[in-house]
Image (cartoon, rainbow, N blue to C red; front, side):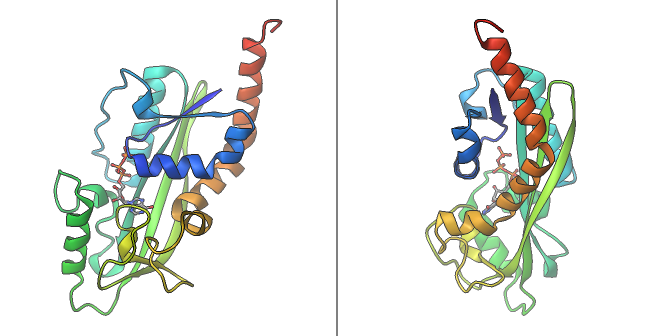
Length: 212
Ligand code: ITT
């Protein structure tokens, strides 16, 4: 059975492939939205991560009739009232430039001693006969005063998770994948929806087998 990851962000997709390696080894085929021809562009004008995640999952499921998992995520900074939050990708403008986003965030926090923040990831699943649902994962930490590290993507060079002295961009992919908001959301997703997806996969295998 295919699970379409309803993202056009190649870094997110890479992390999903790493995090879902066991499910893939067990027979789940992970497909990125970019590999599915003819998908509509989904407008992310929801006011919450939940809204946008559901829009993306439902949009991809409606266009393909297949199972779709979407991620809407962002960094919430306490001293900025939770911004950039749902606007994280376009914080410095519609061109979605991560370096410009990072510069703008550091400028917004210049001289500010309260640097507490969290990454939040909301995952939405949509599929045949399944009303769309969401789960969430969070990772608490602080925002640095300058970018550090070369791994990861987006705001990773600015974010130090609690319990570490390195930023997400200084940690290895394996370390980030143990504690990240996306990893935690995916663990919640597998707890909530794993049995359902395994049953759907078994049904699909039976349907597709010559004797099924
Ligand atoms: P899709 O909508 O196609 O999934 P996107 O990049 O537009 O891709 P979002 O709308 O969810 O995704 O925006 C999330 C932004 O939050 C993303 O572009 C990054 O800037 C930031 N972000 C999310 N998760 C992150 C992570 O693990 N590390 C660093 N930045 C992250």
